[in-house]
Length: 193
Image 1: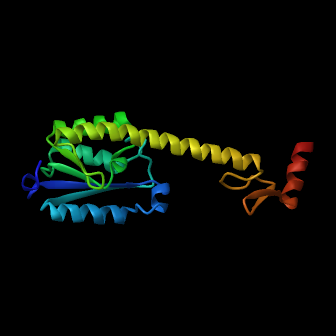
Image 2 (image 1 turned 90 degrees about the vertical axis):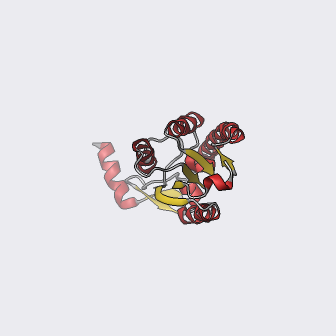
Image 3 (image 1 turned 180 degrees about the horizontal axis):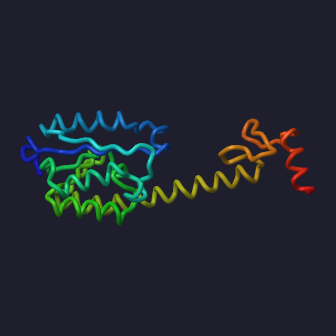
């Protein structure tokens, strides 16, 4: 689709961050700002914004705003022709889910544009690239998970605590569990009884 065909087209914006992406600088506000710049440049009319904060892109479960956006597309509520995202990985990090969601949208005449990736599902090349990149996003998610788990295992091997509250009888000091003597007395008494 050319710029002229996008002129005046109605669009939704979808943004998503996980806690990792917030740290890496892809805040909801930064995504929204970049997408709005694109929409303005293309003379598109943004008629709705959906945002899931602190949620994984693994699947659409647990992403209520994403699910609401799909329902609004199915109902024809705002007559949109496009969903705009900052990066394809914000739309989803599971290839099957991403392609299923995209197909659902296209069944109702709505295409996806990934602004930063320069992908547009209304073109044949865009469809192929979305298929490839959604698989890569899933692989990246799996790698992030594997690296995180390896880091946690290494931290545990070194005596570090991997999160949450310290168990009763311990206190957390500089990331390590140390015995809390007053509480430890109670634990020892329970054990002895």
